[in-house]
Length: 217
Image (cartoon, rainbow, N blue to C red; front, side, top):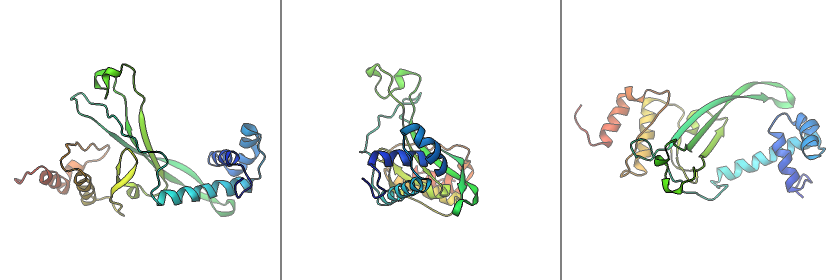
């Protein structure tokens, strides 16, 4: 039994219900309907918040939740392996202290993924014959998007060259890109950005030229 006098299974179900809606709805509707559990609203709240604190502690300590996996990246039409990165934001209703109203906040969700091409010849292992599953890793946070801008090692999700800043200027983007290149200078890579215009930044263009050994204006 846990400190809240719940079995590990009951604690897990309570936390899953607690993050789906309000603690009151989890107590009155979700838990009785889904698991036959009758817990007070305050119990669901304490259990869910305690789990969140434990999760934050292990994340801060850099602990992984599953062993590292080496992904077999698929190829594009030119035969080059490709990793896809995306980021989006979604509104999250908030509740203040003592149930008071609070303004909604935006949760930023980032994902690095390995989509399966339509052409089997572009698969990482075409000879396998069977279509491979999609692979993806997500990170979500209520922090500002700039605070999620850290270079990560794809397989374990470990930060290898963080560049967390309070701003996102052209100089910040150039410095962040330079850190990415510095992790493996010999590797050939292509930076793909969505809804950005870094190609218009002199700082960014000069950093790319320097990395490629170009000296002429």
